[in-house]
Length: 240
Figure 1 (cartoon, rainbow, N blue to C red):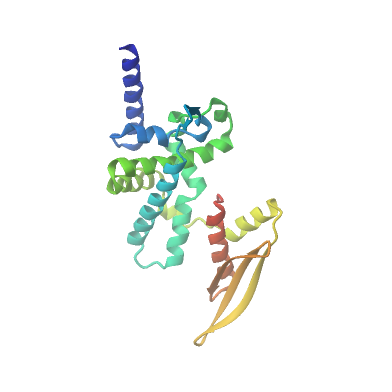
Figure 2 (figure 1 turned 30 degrees about the vertical axis):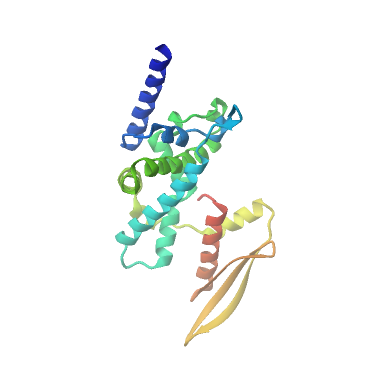
C-alpha cells in the first residue's frame, strides 16, 4: 500500500509539473516521463533499455517546424520563401529553444544526472532538446491541435517577439565560416554567372572539404552565398 501510494504521489507530482509548464493536462503520463528523461539517465534492466527522450525530440522537431512554418505563412502573406525560411530559422534555432526551455523551467523538472546541473553549456542544449521532446509528447498524447496551441500561444505568444526577431541581423555566412575555422575545415564558394531571360543571375556553390554542399542562385552574389550558408547552418545544427 505504501509503495502504491508513493507511485501515485510521484505521478501526481509530475502531472502537476507538466501542467504548470505546458498548460496541458497529461493523459498518457508515461510519454511525458520519456520526454523529460535525458540520455544520461539511460540504464539497463533485464536487458531492456529505459527509454530516453531522443525519439520524441525527433518527432517534436518536425511538429515544431510545421507549426512555425504555418504561423509565419499566415502572418506574412506577402513575404517570399526566403524571408519565411530565415524567420523560421530565427525562431527554432538552438539558442531560441534553450531560451524558451529556461523560461519554462524545463530542466528543473527533468530526469537528469546531478553533475550535469553544473554544466551550463550542456544544460542549454539539454533544455532545448527536451522542449522538442515535450512537443512530441503533447502531439502523441493530445494531437496536433493541442501541440499547435502550446507552440503558438505558450511559446511564441508569451516569450518571443517576432517583430524584434525580424530586425535582428544574422549572418549565416559568418557563422558557418566560424564553424569551419574552429573545425579546421576548408570552405570555399564557386561562383558562376547564368542568364534568366534578360536577367543575369549569380550561381554560387558552397564547398566544404572539396565536397559540394549547396548551390543557390540569386540576383546578388552575396545573397546567394548567404542562402547556401543558411542551409549549411541548419544542416550543421549551429546556434546564433
